[in-house]
Image 1 (cartoon, each protein chain N blue to C red):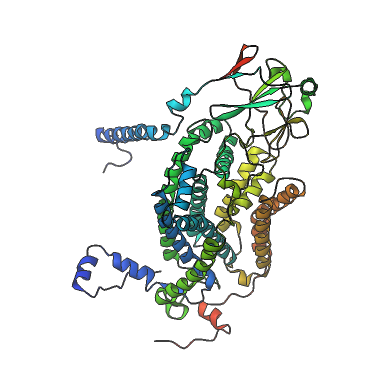
Image 2 (cartoon, helix red, strand yellow):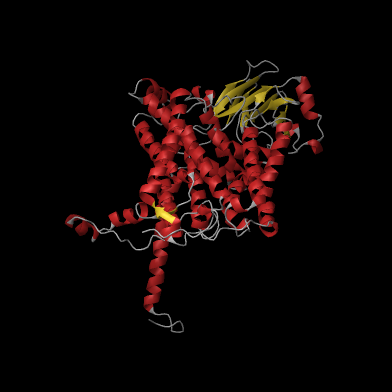
Length: 415
Length: 171
C-alpha cells in the first residue's frame, strides 16, 4: 500500500543519514504521504486518541513511580503522600487513574467502530487479532495497576481475580500460589504486580507497533468498506488531512478527560479503595472498575466456578474468531440492513451486562445476566454466521469516490 | 548439500547435539526466573499458629490469621451441632459428614476463605446459620459445608491439633 519511499532528504546530512538508516523515509511514507481514504469519519480518530492515551499513561505512570512505594506497609500511605505532598501529585495521579478509564472508553469505541464497519474482515484479520492482544494486555495492566494503591478494592479485586486461576483443574492451586508468591495476596504479590505494571505498557507499545505495521500493509478500512482503488480519487495524504483531523479528535476527547480529572476525579472510582487493604475483612459488595463489568457479569452468570471462568475468557475468544464467524462478504454495516440492527442490539446487550455486573448477584439480576450472556454468545456463534447467508445487502459502491459523491458520477481528474 | 537419502554424517550429529544442548541449557537458565515467584523461605517459615480457645463463649466465632489467611474457630451451640449432624448427605453438593470435619463436635475449625473466588464469608448469616459469602452469594452451613451458590467445595479444614482442652495449634 505505502510502497517504496519516494522521500529524498533536502540536505546533504539528511541524505548521508538516510542512506545509512532510512528512518526519516519510513516516517515520511507512513505518516505524511500515506494515502488515507477520503471518506473517513470521526470514529476513525480513535486510533490516534488511543496512541495519545498510551503515551499519557506511560508519562504519568513513570512520574508516579518516582513517588510510590510497592510495599504492603507503605503503599497506601505513599499514594496519599502523592495526593497531598508531591508537587502536582494530585493532578498526575488523577490523570493516571482517570486516564485508565478514558483509555478503555476509547478502546471500546475503537472496537465497536471496527465491528460496525467490518474492519476485521479479510485482509485485516491479523490487524484485528493484534488489536485483541492489545486489549488483553490493557486489561492485565489495568488490573495490576488497580492493586497498587493497596486499598480494600485493590486487595479484594486482586484476590478474586487471581483466584480465577484456582478453577484450572489439577494445577490451579499451584499456579495461584506461584502468582501470589505465598498463600494469599500479600507483599510478594504487590511487588511483582508493580514490576509487571511497569513492564506491560511497553509490551503494548510493541504490539501497537505491529498493529500499525499491519494497518499500513493492508490499508485502512473506511465507512464504505471498499478498498482504495485509485489513490488520486479515493484518498488524501495522511498529512495534513488525517493528522489535523486526529488532532481535533484528540482535543475533543481531552475535554472529556479533563472534565473527569478536574471536576469529578473520583466519580469512576470506588470509595472503598480509600480504605487501606484489610486481609481479614471482605467489603460487602465487591465490584471491579466499570470497564470490566460486562465480563464480571458473565463470570457471575454461570453457576459453576470453572464454567464462569471459561465463559468469561470465551467472551474475548469470540472477538478473536469474529473474522471467521461473520460470513458476509460485505464489510460495512451501512450496506447491511439487518446486521445494522443486530449491531445495536449487541451494544445494548454489552451495556446491559455492564449494568448487571455492577449490581449484587440477587434475584432478577442473576436471571437477566444469564439471558444477556446467552445472547452475547448467540450473537457471535449463531446470528453472525447465519446472517451472512440469509441477509440481502444493499448495493455496495464501486469505489470510495462513488460513495462520497452518492450518484457515482465520475469526478473530474485533479492535478 | 547432502540429499535426504544420504547417510547422516558426523556433522549432522553435531548439529543435532548442539541444538539439543542449547535447548536444555535455555530451559535450565529460564527455570530460576520462573521459580523465584514461588513462596520464599520467609513465607514458608510462617507455618503454625497457636490459639487459646478457653475464652471463646458458646456460639461465637473467632478469626485467627494463619499463613496470611483467616481461620474461623467456631464454638458451636447444641442446636448448631444438631443442624450439622442431621443433614442427609445426599442433599449436599460436596457430601461430607460433620464428624469427618471436626475433632470435637463443639469446635469447628475451617479456613475462612470461600472456595469460589477467595472472599471471606460472613459468620452467622445465610439460610443455614453458617456463613454467607457477600461476593457471589455462596451459603455455608454450621459445618462449613457448601449448601447454595457457585462455590465448588466445602470450606477447607486446616491441619490442627488440641494441645490441651483449651489450646489448639493450627498448622
